Image (cartoon, rainbow, N blue to C red; front, side, top):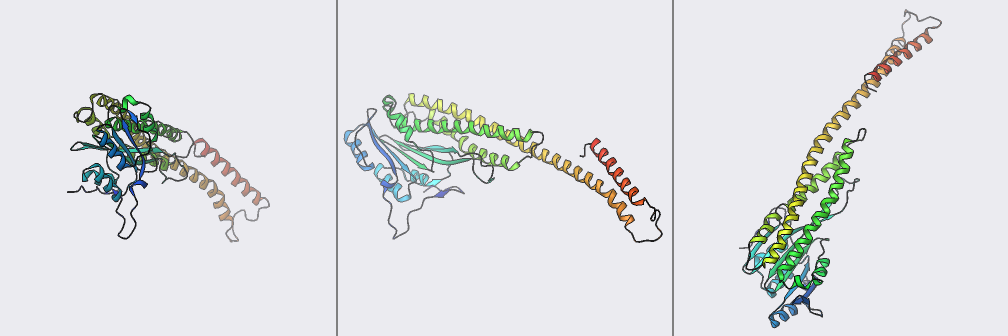
Length: 356
C-alpha cells in the first residue's frame, strides 16, 4: 500500500494524458561510474552506467537528480529496482528527516537550508529557505534527489572524487558526504542567524529605539522552520551510527558519529535561539507598552498646556456686556500674561515629573 503524504506536503504529479513526458535525462544533473575509488572516464547515461557496473561486477553508480516528476522517478526505479515506497517519498516534498530500509537499500531524507538575508522592508520575506535532499543507497548505486533551488551537491562530488580512499568504502560513503555537507550548512546558517538575533537584541534594549516586533517574529518563524528540519535528523543519524551494520562499514558509521555531534551542537544552538527570541518578544511587548505610556503622558501634557489658554480665551470670548474687567484698558495684555505664566508653570511642572 503506497504511503500517504502528510498534510501540507506537495507532490510532483504525472503529466496529463496527451502531454509529452519529459525524458529522465532532463532531471539528471550528473551521472558517474566509480570503480576502486576512481571515476571512469567518459559520459554515461543512468542506464549505461548501471549496465557497466553490473557487467564489471564491481563499483557503483552515482546519479544526481533535480526535481524529478513521477514519470522520471518511475523510470529510474525500474532501472535500479527501487522499492515503490521510495518513489512515493522522493516525490513528496516537505518530508521530515528520516532514514528507512527497504531490503538492501537505505533511504535518507535531509532538509537543506539556505540563508537569504534579513529583508527588513518585507516582514513576510523568508530569512532561511528550505529544500530537501534524498539519498538512496543500494549495493551498486547511489541516487541523490534534490528539491529546491539551493543545496547543490556538485562540491560534494568534487571533494569525494579528490579522495579515492573514501570512495573505495562504497556507496554509503556518498551518503555520509551528503549528510556531512548538509549539517555543515546548518552550522553556517546558524552562525548567520546568531548575528541577526544579536542585532535585534541590541535594537530591543537600545534606550530610545522604536521596537519592530515584526523583525522578531520573522526570525522566530524561520527558527521554528529550521528546528523542524534539524531536530528529527538526530534520530536518523543515530540509527546510521549503530544500525545497518550489514550495509554500512564500521568506518563510515564512525564518520556518521562525527556528523551526529555537529548536528547535536546546531540543534542546541537553534533551541537557544528559539528561547532567546521568545524572551525578546516578551521584552519587546513590554517596551512597546512603556513607549505607549510615555506617548500618552506627552499627549496629556500637551493637552494640559493647550487647555488653560483655551479656557481663558473661551471665557472672554463670550458675548456678555456685564463681564468683569471687560473694559479695562490693559485687560487684553493682562490676560495674555496670565496665559503665558500658566503655560510656563505647567511646562515646568511636566518637565519635573518627566512627562515632557
